[in-house]
Length: 165
Image 1: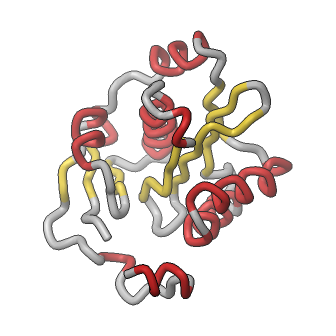
Image 2: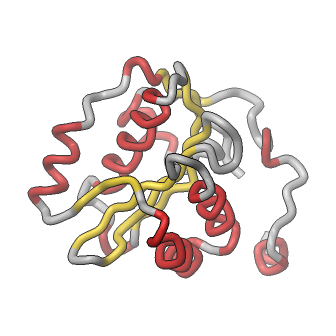
Image 3: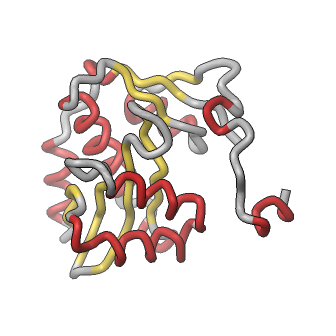
């Protein structure tokens, strides 16, 4: 488990240019809608596992929905969630391995964090941040010392995940 990171939501990079760059590649990054829930959570589980599927399902339970998707030609390329594990938290998020390096992860990160800002949050938490250098470069995120395991302390995990530890 990785440490959490703190993001100043009032100092986020602009979103519009990043979304435009994605659109130029034929990629749409947007908030998911209710009828997509099954497709999205099945994709998340297939690519990232049961735990992330569970968090994604929680994000779909919010109004507005706290799950964002990157799609091209009606196919999922990636996703990002907010307020899934705890209020003000970003994550989980993931991009299909074959689609990485196209800026999709950054677009998903920014659209989700801008959403938290629009909800009135001044700061966001990236829960259990994996690629810390990426988050630091993309949005100025900083590690929260002593945040591992943080809100994830004592979390139940699928048997297969526990066996792999």
